[in-house]
Length: 308
Image 1 (cartoon, helix red, strand yellow):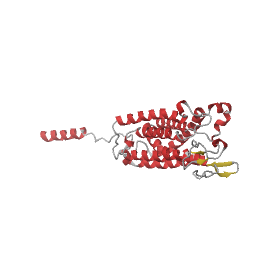
Image 2 (tube, one colour):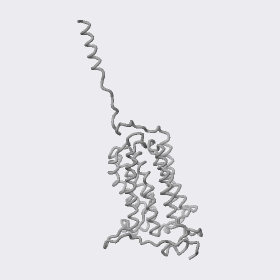
Image 3 (tube, one colour):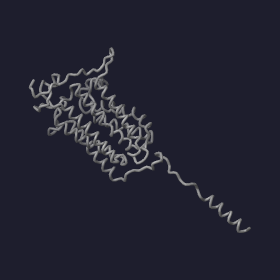
Image 4 (cartoon, helix red, strand yellow):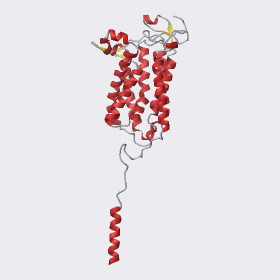
């Protein structure tokens, strides 16, 4: 091995074995991402200062929503991978579609699943759709970060051949023993840590008072960072490069970028939302008691005094 190549730390993709059952790092990344995101979302919802008053939905609402978004991530991510990345293979082997433990999830498919979960839950619970989407996107980079770390642990989705000092030789015949970019770590840093920091900064500056702004910022940020990282990531072997050297990840990020710009423009064109500090969401304003009976009684007493 060249002295300028970093040794790849070999990990066992299985964390713990329980007889025929196994807990894999990839599954653990999903579980931890959802749990940590849930806890942070609860804190954001409970912080009235970020909303200019009570949030437009409660912490308990979001607790119920977690199951919906979890199903959206898993079903959408798997469906997206089947349709976008390996449709011919799964048409020939349909029984493998449900074998999620073998890997194969698509972020863009998972994002669509989350969107559907937000829409359906908001309609059922009668909560503001854009604000629910804002909170969901705000904590999304946490799961992305852990997912990319799991990709690195599994030695999958590695980068293109390179001679940079931090190049690594990944295991497996497909990697061909060639030093490559550890592109999973690039994506973990940009799509996870950097994007999360940007969204938290926007929230501290009042972005939650403009429903849809965090959704748009997340979509724009992810699309740009994913497209940049695709310059270092090896395309999926069954797809290769597309038109003009682009990749499927770049292609799928384009509509995400356009949608994000639309959400940001929509949010900024509307005035910031402020709720009364002591008024619960969806509650009618407190009105002063009707003064008509009091005034009528006062006039009657005056008339009695005049006639006396």
